[in-house]
Each structure stands twice: as C-alpha cells, then as structure tokens.
Image (cartoon, rainbow, N blue to C red):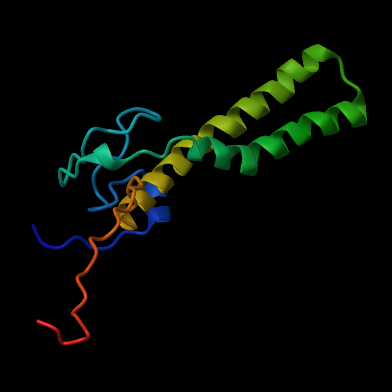
Amino acid sequence: MPDPIPQSPIACAVRSACPRCGRGHLFKGFLEIAPSCDACGLDFAFADPADGPAFFVMMTTAIPALGFGLWLELTYDPPVWLHFALTLPVVLIACTLPLRFFKGWLVASQYIHKAEEGRLARPAAPVAKPDSTGAP
C-alpha cells in the first residue's frame, strides 16, 4: 500500500472518515467507533477520546442552549410545559449532534499526532566515569 496522504483532523471529523486513508468509516453506529477501517484496515484500538467530546460539547453548545432556556424564562415567563416543549428539545439536539464531530476530531488527532498513553520514564543506568588520576 502506498504511503497515505496526511489527513486533517477536522476534515476527518466532518466526514467521519478514517484518519489514515480518509476513505473508510470511523464509526460503526452514531457514536460507536468501528473496530477497524473498512478501506485500509487501520485498527482503531488506539482510539480513546474518553470524556473529551462531552467536555467540548458542554463548552460550545450546552451553555448557549441552556442560555436559551434562561432567556425564555426571564423574557416571557412561560409555563413549565412550554419549557418541556421548547427548551428540552433545543438542549437535547444541541448537545447530541456535535458529539460525533468532536469524537471523530479527537480520534483523528490522536492518530495524526501519534498520541499514546503516558508511561513512566525509567532512570538511566549510571555511566561509569573514567578514573582521572591515571591510577591502574
């Protein structure tokens, strides 16, 4: 197989594509990462975005979505059922749809930047210094 063309993490996230070849699928379901790429065979066992996607969704969309509910409450003082009809769907949609993008972006970034789990560094063995006195 020829050397793969370097992929952009953002482009991989937008297309939900394999970070190595850019053609295969990254996801098996909506948020479940596939075991491997169906085009180039890249094993996605390295992929562990952990809570990263949820954090980015909270910072980018959850706060404005909840701001909508607060604005609605303070401006119009609607009944509770209207919050369930308007605010709840806005929050659910705004917080669910971007998860796939952010998860794909973080997985692609892990692959492209060769991110791995941290390991403890072992101290180097002491190096024997030559005797400066010249004694045998």
